[in-house]
Length: 464
RNA sequence: UGCCGCAUAGCUCAGCGGUAGAGCAGCUGACUGUUAAUCAGCGGGUCCUAGGUUCGAAUCCUAGUGCGGCAGCCA
Image (cartoon, rainbow, N blue to C red; front, side, top):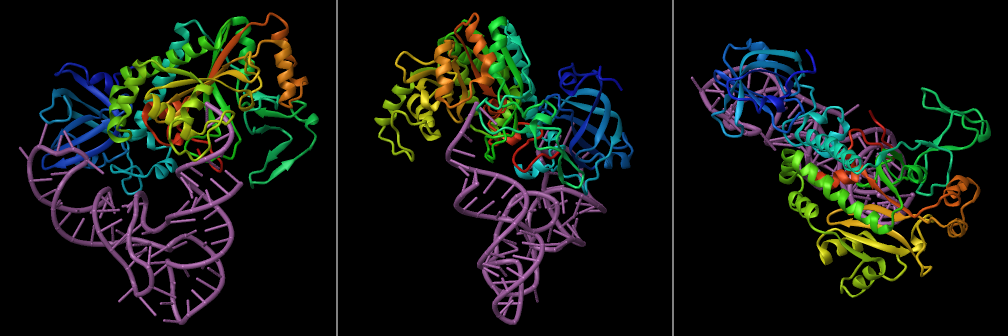
């Protein structure tokens, strides 16, 4: 055995008459008198290989043990399939059972199981249609993202996962400590309460964003992006939140908010178009079984221009909409998801980029506008999921940034290096953040974020 | 963190105060080309846990645990 062999995806496109060998896991087997059909999948593509086994080609007890979940090697000739549902099939001359899967205890079934149950068997669910497709799309999307940035000469950078600055301000953080150890009986032991004695000599945490560090790399490499793990200790148990997720954060020097918006729009269109082209079978499955409007929406988003409007314009539209919203609309209010959905789904019907939010509802590092009331922030809102990207032009003026840190009630000292960027060769710069799993929810139509990552980490759950 | 819902066979669920049920899966058999194959038969239960009410609790009450949904927070 060698990895250098044909995958099922490869061999199914070979000409009829070719002698081939396939390795994979049995999806299902159907028996008739004198003939068996074994469907084999190796994850290389959505389609299963139908292996036709005539009587006595494989010993009866071997064939009988080729049950759902068993791993097999099948050898034979590729033939045109007389049945509907596949163009070619493998007419077996030889079959080997590599690893049996006791059908009495194997938990994956041919018929529907709940998402909750499949999460409990996350180590096996990848062998089913849905999760095979999810993780193929996840792979392709990751590749498309790197390709998008590399094609534009953005440098892929790595920002720290452990950070000693508790001032990133994007939510609750996980502490990292060697003073605190855990026994196998489930008891914690704290050797010293003083962080000064701890590994880093001060409190340390898992990162909630690489943005501030990415800014420093951008002010030297010009265009950079991160694509790495991010952690939030928020006790939020929703279909859209994870404690550990992957985030993409481009950052561009010599770039305004307009350039940032152009990048965000190009980015979404290109990644969607790439996945539409390269994962067509998987997306067709999602469109059929998970989200009926998936393909229509993705095709629309990848081709239509994004609408752009300011926060102030959006508030006016909402106020004159005649809709009765649960949360009140007024200038200064943070937009609720019901407001965002109305704008992007009902009013505009395609993605919308909202800009120039009140400074009070946005982060301190966003560039202050001339009006003194709004900042150069942007949110990309998309039909069906709402906010998918959040970004801004960064405040590059030393005095203004200093004042805004003070205004936000943050200590100035930890930001000494961030301020240095404004002290030496400061330039207008901008960037955005995108949650990879949220993008995958959009690409697949999957309704729960726990189902687009192999092993989810959420409050109370860190299995596998 | 707040509010709400759910927990019964391997899975998906019905039963809602009076002897534990169905479909699917599994097992046995039938069928020469199936596509979530079909058909016949068989086996399968700590009704989440601990208290309580009752002649009697899967069913009602309380607490706990687990899972999920929505909201907030955000990506």
